[in-house]
Image 1 (cartoon, rainbow, N blue to C red):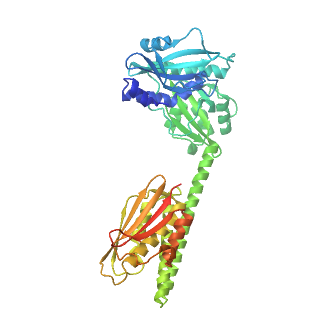
Image 2 (image 1 turned 60 degrees about the horizontal axis):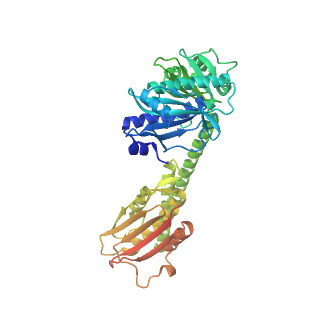
Image 3 (image 1 turned 30 degrees about the vertical axis):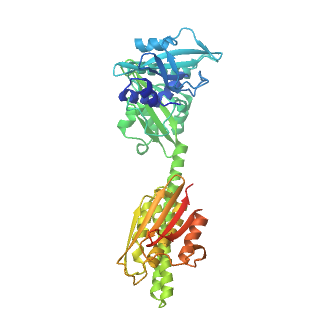
Length: 491
């Protein structure tokens, strides 16, 4: 289906400010649809004046739909829907006398002009399914009156407002709880769900006739409610804002939509949602994340302790071979510790592997002397990697880099600088890493399958068994140095 922007660019003369206004309207028109018990369709005027394009559609959650199929992207020529033509050209609300019949369903249609900066830029058709219509209750009458006020605000250019969008992803809807307050902030009507929410805060009795802001002050301690200005603005219905209020046991989000159908403030719709369970789960997630980070931090500390003990042991051993083995163990433990240190600082189980790779490369010269300075240069970016990939990949890179240094530039070699390039190529399907040096290269007759080198055996096991990838080792085509390639599939 085409988007609003695509339809605007293809078929209308609306400018960027007009589109922004329409997007603000569509961001909140679920409220209008629910209050109206009706489907809303946004119709955009064709640039050639030939008709209207359906740029948006919203079904109500409070009643039956009037549209079985989607109409987004369809075109209605001038004359086919006279209500659209009249509302757009006259700039006023137009209602059909007799209902339309669609798929054996009677539908009442009303068209609302969308006004911005004094001119009509589009129209909204409100379509009400009349099947099952009965004598309306007090709740339904309040909904319909509030919907009428909002549609007049749309027609007069007072709705939407740039300041009305909620910062909360869990902003309340009409069905969560609705309170209608007058110009003084006193409750005219509260839906059953809204009453239930305030009774969970400790309210006894009804809200009708009471100041919503004052009731909240009495129910919620100062430390658990917003500042006085925000409280009065939202619960008094004076500003397009929302706020969070609650006690130690109950948390509510309240959102105000001031009503001024003819320009003067006559009251507001205050939507209320009980988010106690959501906030409890949020706290559990935060606690869980903090616990996971603390575990990674402690694992890192323990690994560093192990590395320190191995270093101490290496200093007390006279055997050069044993000392070298312990130093290799220190290096392997250190590469795992770097991953856990990064995870302890991350908010998720995904790490920026570029930092890990650079630290591994920078640490090459810290353990063991090879008689040459080591320079590792990275080309490309690893991006973010899951912890289950980062740990074995870090160990594999550590082994390949150390192997390139020790065997490509053995102690006593003529090179003053060991230059190693770590190249990274990432696609949606796989991650390919190559480690190239300009050293001595692989010995004649080298075969990775029969090699007894412990480091290469570790790399092969990590890459093939844990990462499900492949390892290839060969001399560079230039005849100088060796080239190792790891290819890891990305899930």
